View (cartoon, rainbow, N blue to C red):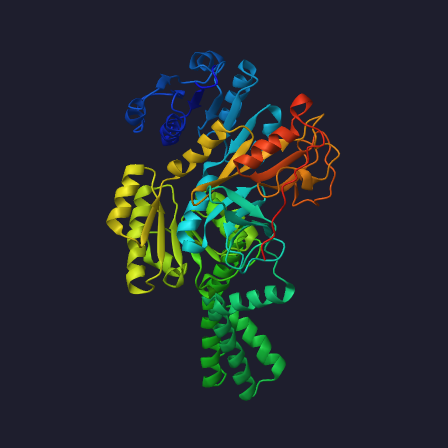
Length: 562
C-alpha cells in the first residue's frame, strides 16, 4: 500500500455505509474504498454504486475469505458499522489476525464493552452513532448557546461561553488564530469561548425533598383523594351515631362492620340510624374497588420506578425528548450532564432509556408522541424544545406537525427537532416546514466522525468550531519516550494540547483532569484534546526509541488572557 494511495474497507448494511464511503473518497483524492454489504436491496445501494473509486462486494457473512477478498490484508483501516455489537467484534478479531497493523473502527452501542475490547487490538477505536449524533440534536434544541458536545466515558466535553459554568468544569479558554487554528488558553475572557468537561451527578433527593414529593404525589392522585373523601364520610357517619345516642365504642364498632359490608338489619332502631347504616354500607362497598385500584397501581408504579421523581407539570423552559431508544437515551443523558431540565416521552414503558431516566431523576410520560394529551402531559406548551427521535419516521413527522401547532398557539420560540433516516427527505422536510422545525439524519451526522477515525491514528473523536477542528486522541506513553519521568504539564505544546485524563495502565479507570505535576510512566495512556500541530508534536514525544528526543520539553509560553 503506497503512502499516497490509501485503501479502506467498510462493512455494514445501512445508509452509514454510503455516507462513510462518500466522506473517504472526498477526503482522499486517490483513495480506494471497498464496501462489503450483505445484498443490494438497500435504498442506499444505487447511490453507493455511483461513487467513483468505490468497489462494492456482496457477502452474507464476514468470514476470513470475505475479508481477504475485500483487501483487509493491505488496507489502511477497516470500519465495521453494522448494528450488531457482537458480530462487529467477531469480524474485528478476524481482520486483526489477517492484518495486525490495520486501524479498526468499530460501531457499538454498548460503549462499556467497547472500552474494554479496544485493549485487544493494537489500533482500535469504538464509536457509537447515537452518541455521535446526540450533540447535533442538542445543539439544534438549545440554539446558539450550544456549540458542540462530545461524550467521553462518563463525561461530556463541550464548547460554550464561560459565563454560568460551574467551578472546576473549565478545561481552558479557546481562541482562533489568524491561520484558523484553535488555540487553548490558560484562562478565559468574559466574552470568549471555553472548553468544559462536565460530569454527571446522580439524582439523590434529600430526605425533606423526598417527603415533599411523596406528599405532593398523595395530594395529586385522584384515587387517593377519592379514598380520603369516602373515609371522611365514614368518620362523619360514626360521629352522627354518637350524636344520636350510641356510645363511642359501639359507634366505631358498628361503623367498621357496616363499612366492611357485614351489617345486619336492625328493624327496631330509629329511622335516622337506619339511614346512616345504609349510607356507611354503600360507602364501604364503593371504597373496596378504590383501595384495590390503589394497590394494583402502586405495584405497577413500583415496577417502573424505585423512587418518586419530579413532576413534569412543575417544569418550564425544559426540553421534551420523545423516543427513549438508542439516540433518545444519549440525548437525554447529555442534556442532563449539561444541567438542562428534561422530560422523557415514550410509548413503551420498557424502552432502553427508561432505567437511565429513573437514575437521573428525569420524569417520563408513557404515551405516543402523536397524541395531544401525551404532549400536554409532558409540558410541550411550556417547553423550549421538542426533540423527536423515535425509530419511526412517520411518527416523528406527525409529531413534528403537531409540535408546530404548539409553536403557533402557545410558544413562538418552541424549537422542534426531528430525526429522519433518509437524507434527501430530511433536507426537503426542513425546507418545507420552515425555521421552527430542524431535521437531522443520524447516519449523516455520524459519517464525518467515522471518516476522521479511519483517517487519523489515535483520534477517537473530533470537535468542530467554526472553520477549525479539535481532535480528541488516546496517546500511549511508550518505553523510551521523552515523557517518561516528566510531569503531565510537559506533554504537548501548551497552546495546542490539553490533557483531559490519565489512564495508569491499559484497562484501568480514567483519572479525569489529573494533577499536572503527576509523573508519567511507560504504559500510561493520555486522553488529550488537541489541534493538528499539538497532536503531531505529542505523538512524537510519546513514541519510544529514536523518534523521541529526550529533554525536548515544550518551550512555547502559555499565554494568559485577562
